[in-house]
Amino acid sequence: MPLTTHFSHNMRTCIVLGLATAVTSLVGCDRPPGKSADSIAAIAKIDSAKAAAGVATTAAAPTLGPGESRLAVDGGAIWYKVSGGGNGIPVILVHGGPGFNSFYLKPLEALGDERTVVRYDQLGGGKSDGLADTTKMNIPHFVAELEALRAHLGYDKVHIVGHSWGTMLAMEYYRAHPEHVVSLTLGGPVMNVPDYARHAKSLVKTLSDSAQRAIREGEASGKFDAPPYQKAIEEFYARYVWLRPNASDLDSSMKTFNTTIYTYMQGPSEFTINGTFKDYDATKFLPKVMVPTLYAVGEFDEVGPAVATRHAALTPGATYVLIPNSAHVSTWDNPEALLKAIREHLRKAELK
Image (tube, rainbow, N blue to C red; front, top):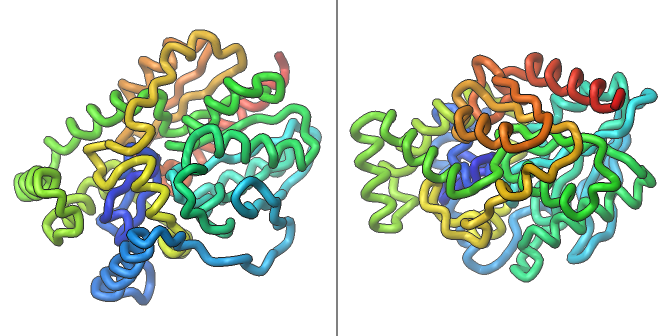
């Protein structure tokens, strides 16, 4: 979705990160080192075939490194990493997608100088087990997964930091388990999918004439793998999803991205969101949020600073911060500014 995530069949070639905001990032589709356009296209075809067959594209049981573990949940096992320490209340990082992974959130582990940081991959993506069962591809399942992780780690209170699709998951987790949440941080927030979709479509008008034409034709025909459409999406990503991606983490993200989940929940297009969460709208619940909440949005974020500002205004006592020189994925584009904003937010939340 906005991902936060974002995605369409191109995502398979350039990678999507956000939630209905699929287009969330691709710097001109920076190619991973050593991969030609032909090889990336080949990977895309393989992943598409797996998705069509209902096969998850994630690797099985990776070797565990320092601080890494696996936890059995409904449908498989999820990978997670615990790092950092200190006296601060633990923070759990919730990545975008859906079907994506947490590689791009690694810069936020720098928060570990004050508190324990937990980074995990939702079932179906990254280093967690694959997922092809559509009955588990829904918000309640992923909320239960997050709750299982918190309970397993024995944390009574936690800060939740979500990004893109992860902000939807963070909000729904808070709605279900408010007693465990000290604060919410919503990066590239998607509190209303229709709002996001309208804004993303408006950004298409800022692209080159050829890109706009290719997107119109691709959306009309449903041929999202057509080269002109993919090139147009690359142009969009380079402006509004990520400006300076980490090549190594982008490569890892591509290899472990589950397009089945993305397509089922988000849809096949960056701009026409017709998956299961197409009507998601948390705006009526926002006035009921009673914990400190930070809305952090990139200056060029596909989610739209104006949209995020409106939603922040609906949230009691919320703080809004614009991350300069950044698109949707601020953890890559301007991690210093993002970390500063989150640090201050977490500290203040613990004083209340």
